[in-house]
Amino acid sequence: MELTLNQEFLTENDCYKTGQTIKPRGVMVHSTGVAQPDPEVFLRRWNAPGVEKCVHAFVARDRAVQTLPWTTRGWHAGTGTTGRSANNTHISFECCEPAGHTYQGGTMVGYDVEANHAYFDDLYHNAVALTATLCQEFKLDPLAPGVVICHAEGYNLGIASQHGDVLQWWPKHGVTMDQFRQDVAQAIEDEEDDSMTQERFNQLMEGYLAGQAKLPPSDWSQPARTWAEEQGIIVGSDNGEKHYKSFPTREEMAQMLYRSRQAQ
Image (cartoon, rainbow, N blue to C red; front, side, top):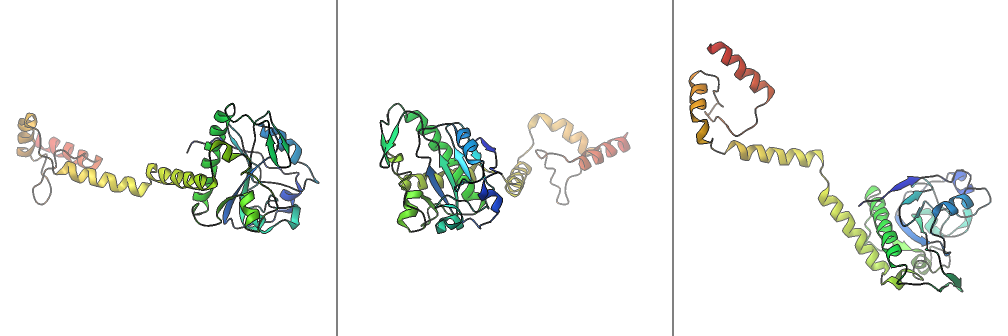
């Protein structure tokens, strides 16, 4: 999951100053409801007292910007401190909409799907990547009911105010929230398959060395091996196995050099 994630906390926003915390149990996806692709515009407007809304991040076409600590209680599912219950449970982010359209009664007017398809694909990729990262960090199952939802779904569940995002936009590009949840789950699976922990590396290395130890030596080294064994430089293990295809440790190298010197 490639994602450029910057951090610009809205320290002047009353939500940030309140400093209430949550234990995240989900992620709620919003869109800004205005044709403005630059998250910096929102950061300037929202980083002030008296703004009774605040999300944890903004997702743009080329990056995401974290605006609250993930465990800070946001004001995204309703107004200020009295907002709906999703404020107590869900991390939130706003998706920045491209330029060129307006709204009438919650409906996008003049939105050019074909012209904005590349923009949407880039933003959608970042939204998937951010949500997958958050689900991994807080051990959330994106496919579990009520975990990864949009604002409109939150309203239908009775945990968010009456907004239609992101269902007024994403379906225009053939994307449903069910597809989004599946894509987040797939991103997590792909990341886990690609991850290499120290424990996993040790297991793989142990198996590799065990396999190498069982390989027979090459014919071209026969004279050197015979000499080294006759001189007592290479003795082998207790059962006589020489493990010629294995890597020598520094201890073993030192021992062989010592025996070579003794044999002179």
